Image 1 (cartoon, rainbow, N blue to C red):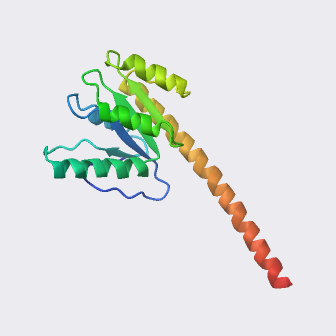
Image 2 (image 1 turned 90 degrees about the horizontal axis):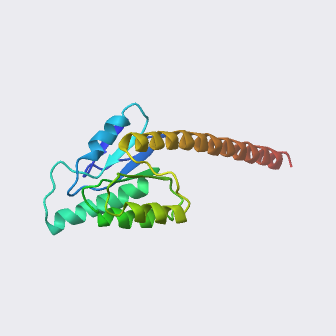
Length: 177
């Protein structure tokens, strides 16, 4: 596992899967630390938006929002966690935005989260029926996505190799003519 914490920029290594830890930061426990430890034996680059030091200024806020926006786009998987301590409206916004994308997302909702029922109903309507109820379950769902990403990568490489062979054969055919 490679651990990247805002504001450090991350650039992907070839074949390296990545997961963005989306969810509560303000007014809730540091669940990202716990989840990162549960992923330590994976190949993931873990992208954590929670900073050790956050200054509540407009300039600092813009840097944070830009970092999150860029790294949400870079990530292969987005893991959402909704802890019971706070509603986290920005995380709800991000969940709505990314749930309609083709990017794999995994979702966990702690029992007692104020909008727990809303998330379950909304996600069920979008086809997400198996939400995690604790961080260990969420980590398992993230690990399953790593397997899926590896399978898709291998399948894509197979197609790329096939295309390369076809192009070489076509080039050979043109040279003979």
